[in-house]
Length: 491
Image (cartoon, rainbow, N blue to C red; front, side):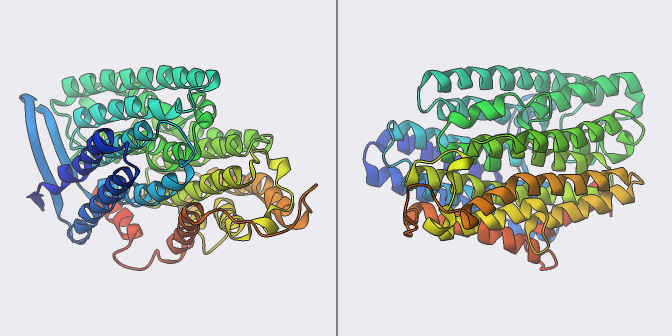
């Protein structure tokens, strides 16, 4: 049941208003923090207020305007969009608290928090986009808003990373625009309200090349190999920005876009007739393994996290490409499962850097004794990525494996096993260094991160456990993932 409601546009508008107020009044520390935290809280309340209705089958829609017949700006809060919006708005509030503590000694805080709010505004716009045009406009706006955050340090390295980021993502956006134009020609609509708007009458070859263009466009931000090159370079940004890029906004926008293309533009039945979906699954499997192999050899903490993100994002793509209910459940659920575990990792890396000045893995000997709570959060996130039961990561790998078996492609179960072993190979050595090696030239006195850094880190680690043990509890995010799957597969 569709209901016209202002809340799908109110949620992104709140963040936009926050950004405007930060730019106007942000030179005053109190007002900068007040508007950042106030808008984050208000937006989360607005998004969560739609959750009961969404779980009961209500879809909230709001048509803003039409440019031409059939093409306009529209917003739609369905189960899939709500899942992404809840993850984004929850993490924005937590990350805002962390950013306030982390950015205290930094320069250009007005610019940082203003564009930080704009980024999340555009992310919620992506989540609630009713059609491909709306999705494209917010997708490109996200690119522009994140650029000042990537180059925040204004060093030559940061400026180079910013140029690389723009080159990759703007070219990706051009492919999305091209694909959207062709889609409108073929389908006569750009709506994302149906489980597939294209049909085989367009011709297999045309549909194949259109699929390649759209997946490539969104695949840049989703960091599918070989389109991932911008992501490790962007690690020159401050830790809250890295967390935003890897867990909340940019990479998830790309993965979410791919889900929309597979489930709402093409649809499961049509893709089963096209061989290109199998190649996407193989490419995702390759990215999962190759990203982990490269991560093993990274000594810089944030670069190891970057290549881990490259690997983990393709869980979402692989799950969607399996075209099975279990695979779809894994793909959607992993948006949250990866987000909370990865943001925990980036919070840990940022806390260690701010507290001790250390940025390299080999420097972390004994850090578990000096920062016990911070490293406890790291351990929870590491175990989740490995896929240990009772963590969020186990849920993703379990459903991905079930989805592979459901599709008759058992070799992807081997990919999951290999991925877990590779994750263990680059996460467990850090735990060994932290707890079983004495620091060189330093004492073992406890010296934890300050509260504004520590508490958001611990809260996200707690979410990693909750997401792993509450899949059967009604009304929680996993229920939304299941509702989205039922819509896609007509269950």
